[in-house]
Image (cartoon, rainbow, N blue to C red; front, side, top):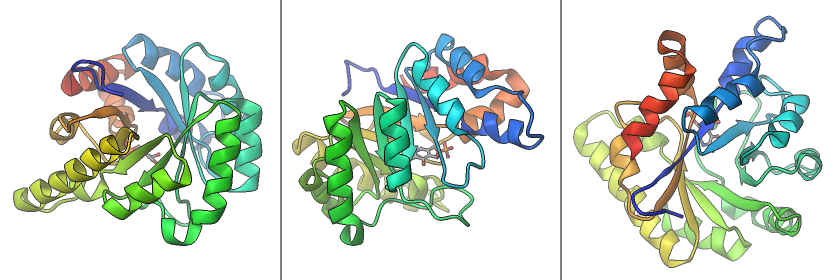
Length: 241
Ligand code: PXP
């Protein structure tokens, strides 16, 4: 939910773990990174436990959930992930599509094929007191299906907006995000957005009416190499509010 002019910033710390996994070492520690990000103004810490464990590991998730403040978990809808989530107990979960060969999440969920199993997963997670969102493309049918499946929130995929080759296309993508956002709000769904956002393209998205939170990872971690994580987070925070 948007409080006054405040859009929450969810900082995804996966790529801190990507660097650690390059050497299978203990540094840099994503748990320590989460603490720095929070001190710098992150409202939530976000992490995606992938089935191939390419960055965050199960143990990281357990430790991240024990830290003070909200942990937002991104995960695929699989029995293994649901069991891990119920054990770890994050504050909220975003269910995302996942395929082993992708470099990063490639767009929103296909709700036409996944509907039935998703509904059951949402019910289980909500029963455990976890707020559930679905990562969707900014399209009216996906918003409506999310509501019908029982989701509390939707996270609109901003990839097409971020990858737009020119101003006209980027404006058109922004309007798609806004329209889907209005519908989500009308349907009483909490509104989040994210994927591919950076220091140059974030401000227009942050002004989308009814937006509650933005989830941003890669650009923040990339910038932190040059300015440090604390500055990278607080610069992003300043841009979105
Ligand atoms: N939102 C979702 C659902 C994601 O899967 C990701 C990537 O983990 C992000 C936001 C963050 O994307 P980026 O790293 O491009 O900022």
